[in-house]
Each structure stands twice: as structure tokens, then as C-alpha cells.
Image 1 (spheres, rainbow, N blue to C red):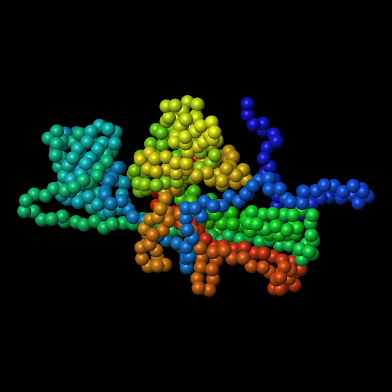
Image 2 (image 1 turned 60 degrees about the vertical axis):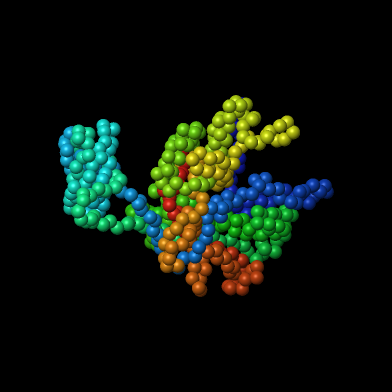
Length: 463
């Protein structure tokens, strides 16, 4: 048995640029003496239609005085190179290694006297050695092996090396070189988001028979109240979804080529796909698959607490995976600490679990809504793992290090102009007196971008 394909959920927008027959009764017949029974109150058949809330839960909003937001993130503390060519031959007592995964060669941070671990990437053996010379012009590191058997792998093998310490002889000079820490510099650009609602003065004076209602509490018998409130709700949603979905315009793209070039911005999904972690090919449904994610987090920031924002199917997959860990859970009725009995509703869901780290699960309406990302055939996102808490970054406005949430929004603002959420009324109706236009125009504007700090600690789950 399965849900029939028809009837399905409706995707036709209820908002259009003109009056439509579905918004008004058109069958009034004043020659008919019988009065129809009407329900004046509009029925909210789709519940709360707004999809915003994600950034309000995990982030913050901070002002910015610039058209460009820049921040610095720490680099690694220790040194490891994974694309190194073994110039020497099998069983050599001394050998040279050419570091290829850093440019220019002068940036190689291996120094004479340091002790290193060298491992063949093909699994053919490993050595430990002391560095005897470094050619910073070519990136060649010369070593002497500690093992009597010499080099454990063949010439031209690709190896990994990392520094684990140093050793010097008695009465020798100290370390001859020093290394400087390096930061990764990231930036993002705010985008301008706009919307508008317009209604004529005549329509504002037209009363309807339907008592309208909106999610922000607006009620009444004036249809324009519903339209204006829904425009505001839609704009509120776009303030969040634009921060999630925005992408920078690529060189040669149509957006860049416009008369007024649009450069785009780095949304959350783009930032995580670009410099975070991607779990592709469906959802992790077993502990073994989740273990691969946990092992990746070990190699990143090792954030103790994380929140999984997931669609409905991913939520079910996690519940089923956790339920399967109970030896009495074949029927799915005894797992967990819910104290289930015949007098209570059976709880078949989990809100979180601990496996190396703490993971909390939350349904994300944006991924389920059929008018947004719900049900996409391609390019689908099933969930996002977001680290909880905050991180320390250098704030150029404050001029010092500051604690910031991993996700936060920066909006343009100064002493004379605040563009976080601007709204103003023009025209000659609805209390406005700015022009001779017989209408009320409600304008909305915001200029903002999202900063994804430490994207290496995020995981996006894609189809």
C-alpha cells in the first residue's frame, strides 16, 4: 500500500499580481431568495507557512560598516605534508624528499634537526628520520634514517611526512630557522534584498466577507491587510533563505555581465560545500556510516556538541538507526528510556544521541516544504550538521578578538543608516502623503550576508 499520487499537495501560489477568482466569491445571485451559509473565518489549511527560524536558532545578527566582511581563521598548529616524492632508493641510509603540496618552496616549514615520521601512501612501509638539510629554493628535505635497514620504500614513491620533535647533539647550536603562523583569510559581501506591496486607495476602502488571518496575527475584513502581511512574511523568509542559498557570481556569468553587475554572496550551503564536509549519495543509516563522519570531525575542530538540522526522511533514518541498537527493538516498541506502557502514547523518535560527540536532532521545515527544497529531484539537501557554541575571530570593527557564533548575519549599518530591516510607505493612501499616487506602496529592504566561521566543522548531507 502507498499514498496515491492524486490528489496531491497544491503548489499553485495563492499570491498573484492581480485579483483571481479563487480569492473572491463570484456566484452571488440576488434573484435567489435563499441566503447561503458562509464561514467567514479563513481556514488555515497549511498551518504556519513560514520556513524561517534556522538562523534565529543558531546565529546572531551584528552590524557592519563595510561593503566587505573579512575574518581570519587559525591554521593548523603542526606540520604535515602528504604529497612528497621519495628521491632516494630502497635501503638508502640517507635520502632526499621533495615536498610538492606547498608552493612556493620557501614556505616549507621543515627545519634542520627536527625528527620526522615518513609513511608510504601505498602502504609499503615507514621510517623515522632526522632532518640534515633543507633546500628552501626547491623544497628538498634531506634526512638520515634511524633504522639500520634504511629507506623502507622504493624510489619515487609518494609519501607523507610529519614532524614529531627534534634531536641535537651535545654542544651544538640551537635551531637555525623559525616558522611564522599563517591564517586563512575569508571574506563575504552583503547583498541587497528588496520587496514591495502596492494597493490602490479605492481597494483599501473595499470590505470583504472573508475574515482574513496571517501568521503574524493580522486579522480583519480588508483583503489588502492579508496581502500586505503576507508580503512581509514572505520577505522575512527570504531574509533567511537568501543567506542559506546565496552563491557568488562566477567570472563570465550572466549576473556579472549585467549593466549593474551582481556579484552574489556566499550562503551557508555554498560555504560548507566549498570548504566544509559533504556526505553524498543519501543519508547515513548505520553507525558505521556515522562513524566516518565522527572520524572526519576528529580531524577538524572536534567540537563537542553539534546539531543536525534534517528533513523528515533523514529524521526517520536516524530514529531507525538508533532503535536498531536495542536488542528488544525488533518491533520498535521498547527502545530508549521512554518507559512505554499501554497507558501512554508510544514514542518512536529520538531527539539526540552521543557517539564520540553529542548530536542533537531538529527537523528543518525548509527542507520539507514542497514550495522550497522539499521533494527536489536533483540538487537536494537532506540535512546540515552545525557545531554549537561560538568561536574566536578577529573583528575588524571592534579592532580585537571577539567571540562569534559559527553562523551569524552581518547587516549594513552606520550612525545615520540602519539597513538591517527597512520598511517605509509611499503614495497618498493608508496614511502616506509622499506623492499624488492614489495608492499605498509598502517597501521592504535589507542588506546583509552570512558569515560561516569554521566551515570545516560543518557537514552537509546531499542526495
